[in-house]
Image 1 (cartoon, rainbow, N blue to C red):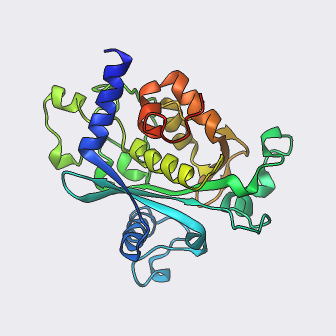
Image 2 (cartoon, rainbow, N blue to C red):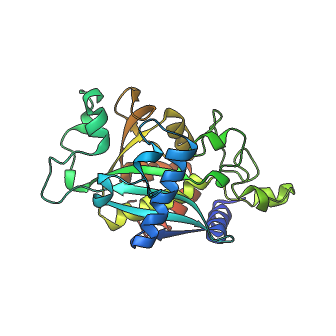
Length: 272
C-alpha cells in the first residue's frame, strides 16, 4: 500500500466513523461535562472527583472558563466517543498558571532549555482527554479514560494491534472488516486538539499524562518532551511540553498518513 492510498484510507475511515464538533454552546458543553463526570467520578473514581461534589452530574472546574472544548462524535450511532479541552492563556495576564504549573511546577526540570522564555500568549494545556467507555474495546482498555493498556506499541497498519475502535456491538467478526476500522479513537481527539490549537494561534502544548498515554501517542509519532518526573497529580502523572510545529514535523517524517489526518493535509500548521 503506497503512502497516498494509506492517507486516503485513514481520512476515509475517520470521515466515515467520526466527526469533531466544537463544544461552543451550553448544550455541547454539558455533554462534555457529563462525560467527564461519568468517567472521573463514577467509573474511574479518581481521588478528588467525588460524585457528591457534582450534584448536577456535570464535572467542571474553574479552568473551563478559559478553555476551548471539542466533542468526538461516532457518526453511525450519533454517540459521543470522547471529549478534550485546551486550556488557553488569559490575555494580559502572563502570570496566570496552567494546571501542570500549579500542581507540578515545583518538580519541573530546572535545566530544561525548552521551558525558558515560553511565549505565554501562545501556550495551551491539553486537558480532560477522555474516551467514552464503550469506545475502549480491547482487553484492559476499559480501565483507562484514554483507552490505555500496558501494551501500547500500537501499529498504524490496519488489522494489526489497533485493529478495531468501534463500539463492541458494531464490530464485525470478519478480519477484513476489522482491518478497515479506525486505528485508535485517541487519534480522533488529536484531530480536535490540532484544530483548536490552530484556531487559537497556539505554538506550544503543555500536557499532564500517565506515562502509558505518552507511550501510546509515541506509537503514532506524537512525541512530547518530558519536563518532570512522575508526580502524584490525580494519580501517577508526568508533565510534558510540545512545540507544536516540531511535534507535527516529527509526525510528518514518521507517520505521514497521520500528519495528513491531524492537519487536514496541511490546512492546519503547514510548516514544511
